[in-house]
Amino acid sequence: MGSVQDDPFARHWLRWVLLFWAIAAIAMIASKWGAIRWFALLDTDDNLRLAEVRAWLDGQAWFDLRQYKLDPPGGANIHWSRLVDLPIAGLILGLRPFLGGIMAEKWAAAIAPLFALGASMAAMALAVRRLVAPAAFALGLLILVFGGQAMAMWTPLRIDHHGWQLAFLALAVAGMADPRQARGGATIGIATALSLVIGLEMFPYLVLIAGITGLRWVVDGGEAERLRAYGVSLAAGCAIGFLVFASNDNRGAVCDALSPVWLSAALGGGALLVGLSLLPVRGWPARLALAVLAAAVIGGCFALAWPHCLSRPEGVSPELDRLWLSKVREARPIYTHGWRVALPTAALPVIGLIGSLFAIWRARRTPMLMPWIGAGLLAATAAAMLLWQLRAGAAAQLLAVPGAAALGWAGLGWARRQARPLTRIGVPALLVLVVTGMFGRLAVDMIPAEAPNAYRKAINTANRRCPTLPALRPIAHMPAATILTFVDFGPRLIAMTHHKAIAGPYHRNQQAILDVQHAFRGSAEQARGIIARHGVTMVLICPGMSESTVYASEAPHGFYTRLRDDKAPDWLQPVALPKGSPFRLWRVRG
Image (cartoon, rainbow, N blue to C red; front, side, top):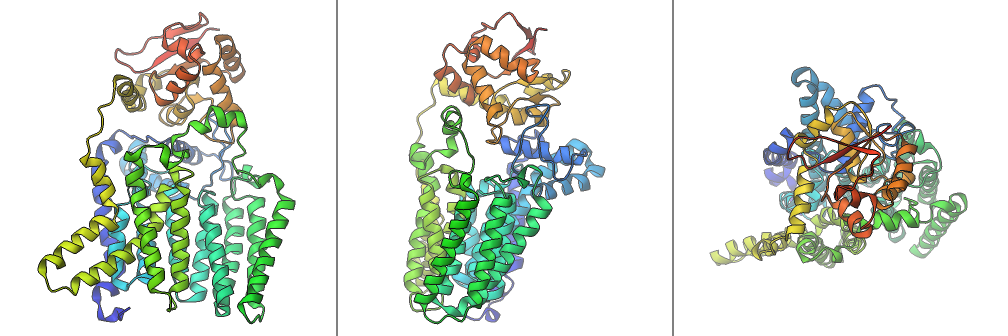
């Protein structure tokens, strides 16, 4: 790397990041202007996040994250934390005196994700500066904005927690690349703790980062300071995070959130890492033996203390997995989604993995070898995770940025040294097309897709119309009720109206989800029993929504299908809705 002081662009990198972020933020708000106006929180988690923030601002306790508008009267057990609620709530409170309640909520939901975008951009720019070259951060930012799945997590109205988890993952990568050991180790530990406070979605990558940090100490005993700072900050960060943010429900021995289960692992693991860093051990074989022993101690103690957490943290029953979770589209492997989804999703991760291998080879005799091995392992793991679930695409694209930037930066350097103007112009253009993964998106756009058939058009229309404010307005004007509706529609219903629902797609509430499944799949009498048990007074369906197609195909004689076909039982009284409404609504007779 050349001297940063010789390059004003590289020296003032943070200013350029802020400018880049501001331009991206303005462009994203402009592109989402209509959605912001109509409060189009299309994802279930975004709607529930809004409902959670509202409940807190209306007086619900800090440590009480139960959503009482789902599965009343006890409420739905939500495994999140208040950390992500803070910027949203702060924006609402700050904007409310000037814009009024609903407009403050709309703009808070539009702006809050952009904070996570800015944090992600700054962290990834810092990582690329340290791994590739001081001025390469600009190329890294360019690559990042072409990561479609990653950028979708920071788009206005995307107030779910995934954007912040990506930001902290990027911060951990920057910490791994930090040449200052204590600062780098502390950065990794703090980023890990903050991510765990939010949720466990990034857990595989965080565990890998822990292993990489330990491996660096095994290879080079001089890395003890990094290991020690990581252990201290991890333990302290998780302890403080648990005390400040763990909800009442997360203070039990649950496996899907920062609870006593994972807090004990963080405290024990942090203490062992600090202990290892203080031992005067010479030779990598001895350090490796100690590291393996420490890992075995942590793993063994965990297995003995928390055996119920050794399987999937969701703890979903086989029946619920068969009826519900296995139907969740993003939870299926990438190869089940067709090439039009797979190619643009996987293009950048594949390029990033190739670039990481290239960077490892170039750094094989330099101090940058271990940082690049770490970045390469993360990129490879994230790419492999796509073979498990499509939802890994956002993290895979984020973690591909350093490798793709290394490949592109080397290519740009080669092009600048060429004498032919055509080469100096054409190669960079081609490089941008390749290292950003843009070629995947272009390939999809260039090959026309088959026109959707009538069945698919009906589904698309229902999915688009039913969550809209105009469609929901007549229902919102009705007296408050507990409504039986689709699992995936529950969060939208409670966020945009004063009504309550039985369930939303949240795994801790297995019985409520199963009750909705059984109601719509089973007989009218079975549905009537479930309705009575939950105190339901109205039944709402939107024929054609994605969830409804599962009921129709797997239970062709079930309760939902009878409702869709206007064969409702006589204990349901139809409720008139405006002409053209996509909904059908019934009131349960006394």
